[in-house]
Length: 404
Ligand code: AMP
Ligand code: MG
Image (cartoon, protein in one colour):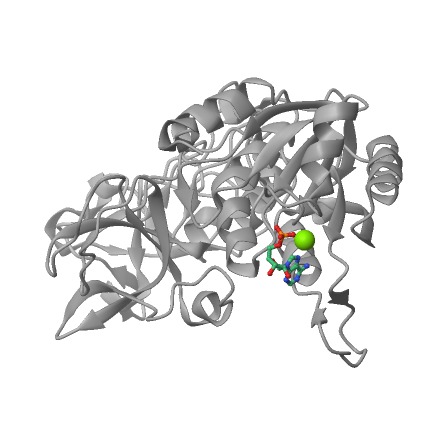
């Protein structure tokens, strides 16, 4: 086939993402169980956080204007955290602890380490300033402002923030349902011995892991034989259960590649063959109204294409509004001598050499070599029609950035 028939990655993503609307259905879950979900509505701050001015240290609350001339202030009260304090008696200090509310009338807290204790009271430094060691009411979140916007990924810190609003439940998009079909007569499940001609099914566990990382609901995970009718039946069954069908293998040009042919004749094939390496035969379309992402069969291609195409698509459908992955520009510690018409995603490592971060690549970049991806901590991008000389800046995507 001609080179021009390969679809550039951006064009492919435009096509795939333009059809990727967030799911309609939302649900309310406990905040304690909301990790990894997408927030389904804006959350407004109902009341200031923190709810009152409070001390950021253990020490003494006082009024700065009482400090002139090395004055000694008697200690008139003690305020542990969790108590509602009485107003400060002018001319005195109160013992206060971290997190305790500042009494009315006090305008600074002096750390206990900076205070001299005498039998009559405490002497604080005269350079104590207004507001010192006071955490202001609403300094974290002011009432009436937006705490978190719809589409935010709930990470541990968002769980805490939502709890700080006083909420124990939170609206989220429902979990995204994915069916995985791996294809190939040669596949044998791990745990079973191989007969001649067979290999173990590698892609199913990789895809399970990737989908678990994305908090998807795996509604089906089956291996389909290279038989047209079996492929068609399995795809139809998957289409009834899932929001997305992900397949591996069977999208190339061979006679045993039934995923693409079933999609073409019984559904819609809207995209096929990308200008990326690995991952050229990727297919996208719809069967029975359910979108299908047809990944290539080679194990390293599955990982790369899922990360570059599957992840942004699924995130969008999950309702997430993610910042785009931008990667890092780092010097290459390798060379690419022959330019390719396809953008290449090399299994690579960001590592420190002589105190500087550089990108190294795994020596064998074959799409069948999954050990390249286990060695790697990310992908190095080699643009179309480009060579790379050592020391030249290239884009590196860390696996964490791609999946996080
Ligand atoms: P295909 O696109 O079906 O021709 O597959 C391309 C290559 O990937 C072949 O060498 C397959 O044996 C291999 N392959 C396909 N599916 C899997 C799988 N689930 N696990 C490991 N290798 C696979
Ligand atoms: Mg096959």
